Image (cartoon, rainbow, N blue to C red):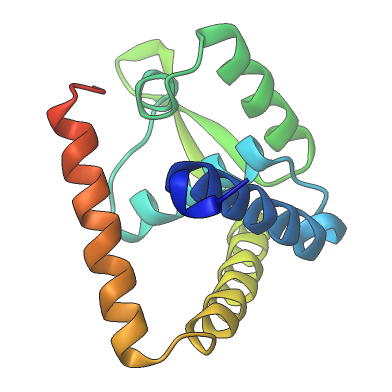
Length: 148
């Protein structure tokens, strides 16, 4: 089969390889992909001094409430996050990274930065510029196709 006929298949295959490499590099941290992504989201929001509640995670990750609850409970059991009561609304709990959660996320960031540098070195500056130009064109075309 001629891969030039199926560029999106190649992007999907590249994405799968990328995810496998990430999973292998993060395996010792004991985090699933969704746990890692939620931890990263909480980390970024905390750096911007924004409060995060479960409802925001449901919307951000487009996952059912029960699934988000499960992930939050696992992250709590691992000591990576805690829930803090909000004054005036006992039902509402702010999700906050613990010191351990911050340390784990900083490790994740360091490892991802090293992987990005590895990939960055595979392409010349001109190839990187062309890559991003092509990706943006594909993204624009898909948006025109009303993928949202």
